[in-house]
Amino acid sequence: MIRRVPVRASERLYGLRVVATPEALDHARFAGSAGSAGSAGSAGEVTVLRIASDEVLALGAVDADVADPHAIVELETGFVGWHLTAAEFVSNVERHIEWLLPTHRPALAQGLIAGLPLKLWFDDDHDHDHDHDHDHDYVLVIASSGLAHEVVERLGVPA
Image 1 (cartoon, helix red, strand yellow):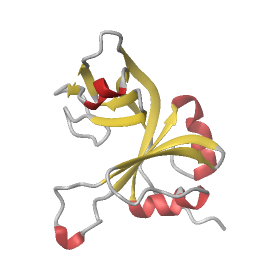
Image 2 (cartoon, rainbow, N blue to C red; image 1 turned 135 degrees about the vertical axis):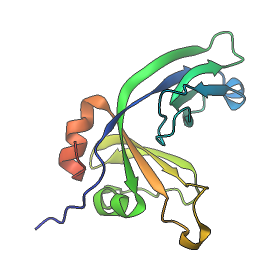
Image 3 (cartoon, rainbow, N blue to C red; image 1 turned 180 degrees about the vertical axis):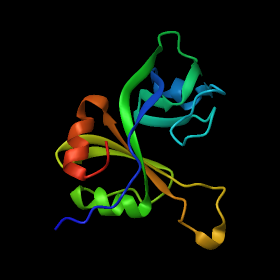
């Protein structure tokens, strides 16, 4: 019998994909919309994921200030994500990972999980009560929207 743990359903992730020089990305600034939620669910919040030295995915961003005249800034809507608690991540995802996970937070990890190319954003809610140190930590599992059904099937997360 497979033990299933209820987790939150996936959501479409919106933001900007920016390709520019590494130095320009180091100093780039991003703004979110007051009416749209970023990856953490708060209106106006932007989560910047450095997916390569010259590329970022800025979840929740609607505007980018990048000091590179050749920068490419495009709306990105091709990803879905599942916000999992640490316990949900361990139950549904971690057992499928064959590589070392980062130990510091916040951190981005990318690789094959159950044969699927996924991104993991490990965040830490810094506003939480320190008596319950990791109660509010979460992991955002990110997949290309075309693979969402495979993530559901292979990892047991809800559609």
